Image (cartoon, rainbow, N blue to C red; front, side):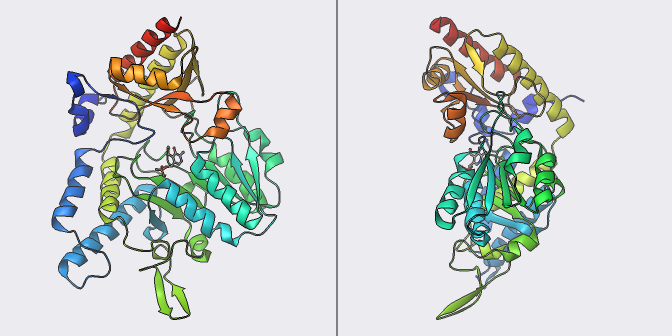
Amino acid sequence: MGFDATAFRRQFPILATEPGGRPLHYLDNAATSQMPRAVLDAVVAHETTRRANVFRGNHSLGDAATDAYDGARQSVAGHIGVSPDEVVFTSGATGALNLAAHSFGSLLESGDEIVLSRLEHHSNLIPWQLLRDRHGVMLREIPVTPEGRLDLTSLDRVVTPRCRLIALTHASNVTGAITDVAAVVAAAQAVGARVLLDGAQRAPHGGPFDVAGLGVDFYAFSGHKMYAPNGIGVLWGRHDVLAEMPPFLAGGHMIDRVRWDRASYAPPPLRFEAGTPPIAQAVGLGAAARWLKTQDWPAIRAHMDGLMTRMLDGLASLPGVRLVGPASIEHRLPVFSLTVDGREAQEVCRALDHGYGVALRSGHHCAQPLMDAFGVAGTVRASLLPYNTAEDVDAFLDGLAGVTSRAA
Ligand code: PLP
């Protein structure tokens, strides 16, 4: 049985709305995904039947809220193949990466090295720059190839015996390139370094996946890019690694015992979840994880391969359009960045929005050092999820053809 894209799309109420009587071609999925009815219903059900604070209330409603929050953690842990006590709920990938940089980073010493890459989102760069400034660690860089992949031939040179952490994106939010994790893990293990992956872009693509089996130590992602609400994300860490890390944020609920002059802390994950957590958001993320499990991923993959091929063939046929990223569908996500000769990225996006109902993103995509490497100020970015169709891709390509013909 093939993939029924129309039935899949129908699960997303917002995609049925037609602003100004036009269909919405939503191609800004790398920024935020839409939410299926299953997730929306779970959030509404929580807020209307179980809304209370967690862990504290001495009443049935509080118990129900706590069960829902714990259940969400279990669903997320099941989705990525890890133990629930290794799943720290954060505000998003940015929250998760800052937690790692502060807390794991505080265990590092001056002169220790952290390896990052030119492909990183600012969220996986600036927290480490701040750590460098506080702590005297050194940052080393894996460069990118002309097609926007990590240049892993540099690993031998960049990863030295002083390396304590390699922190890389699992997939680029600009070029769509997927990282060869096995090569990175091998390089880290050779010098006893930890590996952190920023999975913000990879997490929405695919069903349950085996994060622990990747051989990494940390994995960060955001709910709102993965069919779930805003304000929730995850830092997964190996339990023995988390157990050694001090708290990042402090306050209610992350404690063991507090005295006037000192405090001891709860074990992970609660040690890292100070204050009232984003409860309904976590419930939504748990629902998204369960919903992802029920989808037909082999059929979805074939659908996405078809869309990626259509997109790449279409882009290659447009004069003046330059792809910033791999030109084949191998080891890449359906995230396409491009420039149009003679036109500003922002202008292209506005023209496609107004003229064709295509929602895109333009700019540096929080990856200015990568833009510098490519010598561009910004790109137009179109990014797909399985609810996108051939009509969405064609609307984008038609719009681009219109813009390039006017530019000529
Ligand atoms: N890392 C990558 C690769 C991203 O694409 C993003 C967001 O675009 C982030 C981190 C930050 O995610 P958030 O803004 O949800 O915290």
